[in-house]
Length: 178
Image (cartoon, rainbow, N blue to C red; front, side, top):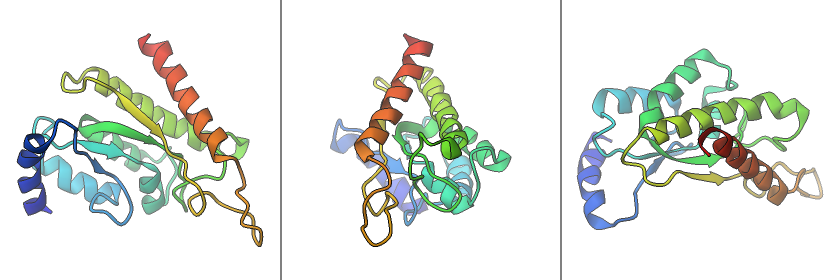
């Protein structure tokens, strides 16, 4: 990993004007909050060019904890300077995507993720390198989306869920930053 990032970071800005970012995702190098913390924090500063995408739904799954976990929150807080894009998906202790983040039983998770996203937005607003703040509502179709047995019908409408996530993020952003 050291060799890869030491070679790719200087190279990525020379290749394209499109930012190249590295996602926190299962089955990728940044799959775990602990691996991510232990690799990024001692090896990079916010000025080194490492640009990351937060998809913290994978962190809650790998760490098997909810957004109130103090250890996970400490890692997420420490990684904020490296985050340049947010994937807006609400995960949980045992999976990368709740069936419906609007449901009362998932609202504490939704609000926990929203706090993380809002903290990232606040950090981005202070970062001169970030010209545009980007957020993608990213609840996916089956098999990310839980389905009913036998029929494989999605439990909730993904378009409505992503519209809900996006509208709430935009509303919170506008209320804080205009």
